[in-house]
Image (tube, rainbow, N blue to C red; front, side, top):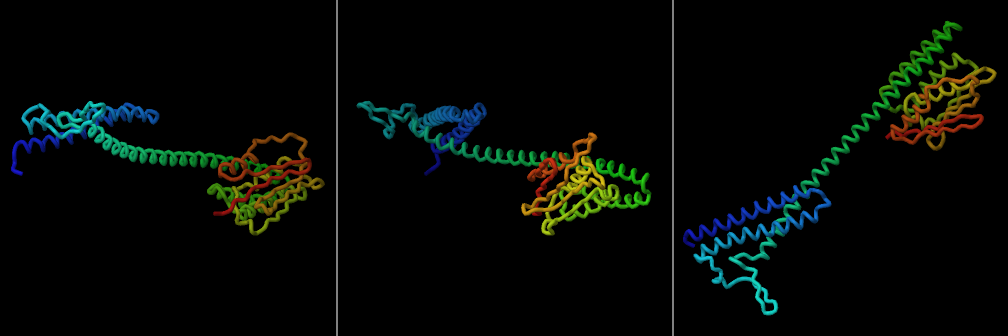
Length: 334
C-alpha cells in the first residue's frame, strides 16, 4: 500500500487509541483501589471500576472513531457507513455503532483489561502478605526465644546464690564442730560448684551427668547429717541418656532436707528411681519441722517453670500424710 497521510493518520490514531485506553484504564483501576482499599469494599470497587472504565474506554474509542471517520470520508456524517451492529426489537432498530464505535466492544475490552490488573495486584499482594506473615512469625519466634532465654537465665542465676547460701551455712557449722570434716566438705563443695557453673551453659543435661553430680552433693549432705539422712538411687541405665533441666535433683533433695526433721533416731529417707513411663521419681517420707521454715519459693516453682519454658510436660507433685513425691518427665534426646 503506497504511503499516504491518511494511512499515517489512521496508524497514529490506532496507536493513540491503544495508549490512551491503557493509561485511562490504569488510572481508573489505581484510583478506585486507592479509594476503596478494604476487602469488604471489593464488590463496590469492582462495580464502580467497571462502569467508569467502560465509559472511559467508550469515550476514547468514540473520539478516535470520529477522527478516523473524518480521515476516511472527510465528513462527520456517519450515514455513509453501512456495516454496523444493530438489534431489532418490535420493529425498532437499535444501533450499537456510532462513528465506528461498538459500545459492546468497549465493555468487552475493559472486561479483558480489568482481570489482568486484578490478577497482578492479587499476586503482588499475596506475596507481600506472605512475606509479612513470615516476617511476623520470625519476629514473634525470636522475641519468644529471647524472653524465654532471659527468664531461663534468670532462674539459673536464682539457683546459684540459693545453693551457695545453704552450702556456706553448712560449712560454717562444720568449721565449729569438726574442722577436718570441714576441709573435706570444702573440697567436695568445690567439685559440686564446678558442675553448677557448667550447668549454666546449657538448658538440659543427661540424667547420668545429673546423677554423678547428685552423688557428690549428697556426700556433702551426709557429711553434715550422718545417719539422719538416707538416700537410695535405683535408675535404669537405659534412662541415663535421657535429659532433664540441670540441678533439678539438687533442688528436690534440698527441698526435702529443708522442710523435714533429720535426726539419727528419726532419719529422712529420700529415694530416687525411674519407672516404665520414662519418669524420674523422687520420694521422701514426711516429717515436717515444728518451726516455720522461711521459703523464697524458688525450689519447686523453679522446676515447674523450667519445664514449661522448655515446652515439656509439667512434673507431677503428690503428697499425702506420710510421703511427698515428684514425678519428673524425662526428655528423649532427638
